[in-house]
Image (tube, rainbow, N blue to C red; front, side, top):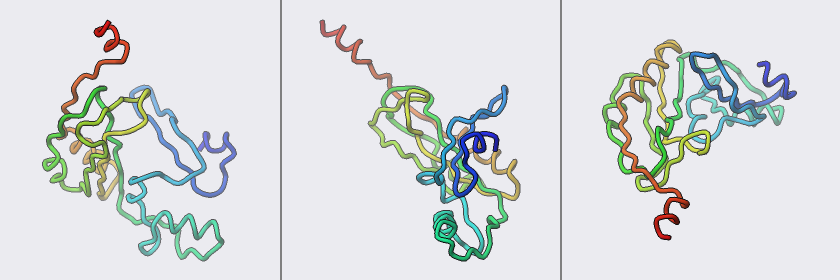
Length: 167
């Protein structure tokens, strides 16, 4: 809330990403826009209204029956890239998808492609979507599903290392 006010965002959609750790809560992205990509599927409003429809109705002044979000808790984990290199394999997908409360596990970087961890990289390996009765249960479900996943990543030589080897 403080970050949006500091940026002057007082009306319309806002996208906020936070980094949570033992030291606190840290905003890493705050923008006057909707949530991007696949993450928006976690939200529904009123009687089955999508986030996109809600935003368009708000922007055009069209009637909105309800701003109430669906009552169940929902969450998404952007799967972090644990190491840089080439993604060779992803294991544990079926086990992760089988955890009660998990809606979907999506790997968005194809096998054989380069992966670069944050902060240098700009992508996530994929997404885990979950629902439950309360937010704490959804968080636990997301963490349990993530713990099932195994990523095989080969090291990739940097261009300076490759050039040095050829010289």
